[in-house]
Image (cartoon, rainbow, N blue to C red; front, side, top):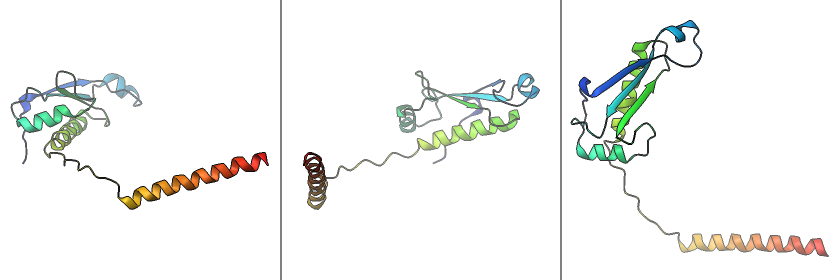
Length: 134
Protein backbone atom coordinates (compact mmCIF):
# COMPACT_ATOMS: atom_id res chain seq x y z
CA UNK A 1 0.00 0.00 0.00
CA UNK A 2 1.44 3.36 -1.04
CA UNK A 3 0.59 6.56 0.80
CA UNK A 4 0.67 9.88 -1.03
CA UNK A 5 1.12 13.00 1.06
CA UNK A 6 -0.16 16.17 -0.64
CA UNK A 7 2.22 19.12 -0.96
CA UNK A 8 -0.16 21.26 1.14
CA UNK A 9 0.51 19.12 4.24
CA UNK A 10 4.26 19.79 4.14
CA UNK A 11 5.81 22.95 5.56
CA UNK A 12 9.32 23.78 4.36
CA UNK A 13 11.64 26.36 5.84
CA UNK A 14 15.03 27.20 4.43
CA UNK A 15 17.78 28.12 6.87
CA UNK A 16 21.54 28.48 6.74
CA UNK A 17 23.51 25.29 7.11
CA UNK A 18 26.02 24.75 9.88
CA UNK A 19 29.55 23.41 9.51
CA UNK A 20 32.26 23.98 6.92
CA UNK A 21 31.56 25.46 3.51
CA UNK A 22 33.20 28.88 3.38
CA UNK A 23 31.21 31.95 2.47
CA UNK A 24 28.49 29.84 0.86
CA UNK A 25 27.38 28.77 4.35
CA UNK A 26 27.13 32.37 5.53
CA UNK A 27 25.21 33.66 2.51
CA UNK A 28 22.88 30.96 1.20
CA UNK A 29 20.02 29.27 3.04
CA UNK A 30 20.53 25.72 1.74
CA UNK A 31 19.43 23.68 4.76
CA UNK A 32 15.80 22.50 4.72
CA UNK A 33 13.56 22.07 7.74
CA UNK A 34 10.59 19.94 6.68
CA UNK A 35 7.57 19.72 9.00
CA UNK A 36 4.75 17.20 8.67
CA UNK A 37 1.87 17.03 11.13
CA UNK A 38 1.50 13.29 11.69
CA UNK A 39 -1.24 13.68 14.31
CA UNK A 40 -3.56 15.83 12.14
CA UNK A 41 -2.80 14.47 8.66
CA UNK A 42 -5.92 13.32 6.78
CA UNK A 43 -3.82 11.37 4.25
CA UNK A 44 -2.54 8.84 6.82
CA UNK A 45 -4.67 5.80 7.72
CA UNK A 46 -5.49 5.65 11.44
CA UNK A 47 -3.42 2.50 12.07
CA UNK A 48 -0.32 4.00 10.42
CA UNK A 49 -0.74 7.28 12.33
CA UNK A 50 -0.92 5.43 15.65
CA UNK A 51 2.18 3.36 14.87
CA UNK A 52 4.17 6.45 13.84
CA UNK A 53 3.14 8.41 16.94
CA UNK A 54 3.90 5.42 19.19
CA UNK A 55 7.50 5.36 17.97
CA UNK A 56 9.97 6.99 20.32
CA UNK A 57 11.51 9.12 17.58
CA UNK A 58 13.17 12.32 18.74
CA UNK A 59 12.16 14.04 15.48
CA UNK A 60 8.47 13.90 16.49
CA UNK A 61 7.39 16.73 18.81
CA UNK A 62 4.90 16.36 21.67
CA UNK A 63 2.22 17.80 19.36
CA UNK A 64 2.79 14.98 16.84
CA UNK A 65 4.70 17.07 14.28
CA UNK A 66 7.61 15.37 12.51
CA UNK A 67 10.55 17.76 11.98
CA UNK A 68 13.23 16.66 9.50
CA UNK A 69 16.33 18.80 9.12
CA UNK A 70 18.34 18.16 5.94
CA UNK A 71 21.69 19.88 5.38
CA UNK A 72 23.97 17.18 4.02
CA UNK A 73 24.28 18.74 0.58
CA UNK A 74 25.40 22.12 -0.74
CA UNK A 75 22.28 22.83 -2.79
CA UNK A 76 18.81 23.64 -1.55
CA UNK A 77 17.19 21.37 -4.13
CA UNK A 78 19.26 18.32 -3.14
CA UNK A 79 18.50 18.93 0.54
CA UNK A 80 14.76 19.15 -0.28
CA UNK A 81 14.95 15.77 -2.03
CA UNK A 82 16.87 14.31 0.91
CA UNK A 83 14.27 15.55 3.42
CA UNK A 84 11.42 14.12 1.35
CA UNK A 85 13.19 10.76 1.01
CA UNK A 86 13.63 10.64 4.77
CA UNK A 87 9.95 11.52 5.25
CA UNK A 88 8.98 8.68 2.89
CA UNK A 89 11.20 6.26 4.81
CA UNK A 90 9.61 7.35 8.11
CA UNK A 91 6.07 6.87 6.77
CA UNK A 92 7.03 3.49 5.22
CA UNK A 93 8.28 2.32 8.61
CA UNK A 94 4.76 2.75 9.96
CA UNK A 95 3.06 0.76 7.19
CA UNK A 96 3.94 -2.69 8.53
CA UNK A 97 2.66 -3.79 11.92
CA UNK A 98 5.47 -5.22 14.07
CA UNK A 99 5.46 -8.99 14.51
CA UNK A 100 4.12 -9.90 17.95
CA UNK A 101 6.84 -11.22 20.24
CA UNK A 102 6.43 -14.86 21.22
CA UNK A 103 7.60 -15.59 24.77
CA UNK A 104 9.86 -18.63 24.98
CA UNK A 105 11.37 -20.60 27.84
CA UNK A 106 14.90 -21.98 28.02
CA UNK A 107 15.05 -25.74 27.51
CA UNK A 108 15.93 -28.09 30.34
CA UNK A 109 19.31 -28.80 28.72
CA UNK A 110 20.05 -25.05 28.48
CA UNK A 111 19.22 -24.59 32.17
CA UNK A 112 21.49 -27.50 33.07
CA UNK A 113 24.35 -26.08 30.97
CA UNK A 114 23.99 -22.71 32.68
CA UNK A 115 23.97 -24.21 36.17
CA UNK A 116 26.91 -26.47 35.29
CA UNK A 117 28.90 -23.46 34.08
CA UNK A 118 28.09 -21.61 37.32
CA UNK A 119 29.27 -24.61 39.37
CA UNK A 120 32.51 -24.82 37.40
CA UNK A 121 33.15 -21.10 37.81
CA UNK A 122 32.53 -21.34 41.55
CA UNK A 123 34.96 -24.26 41.88
CA UNK A 124 37.60 -22.29 39.97
CA UNK A 125 37.21 -19.33 42.34
CA UNK A 126 37.22 -21.55 45.44
CA UNK A 127 40.40 -23.27 44.23
CA UNK A 128 42.01 -19.87 43.69
CA UNK A 129 41.27 -18.65 47.21
CA UNK A 130 42.55 -21.90 48.78
CA UNK A 131 45.84 -21.63 46.88
CA UNK A 132 46.55 -18.14 48.22
CA UNK A 133 46.25 -19.16 51.89
CA UNK A 134 48.21 -22.43 51.68
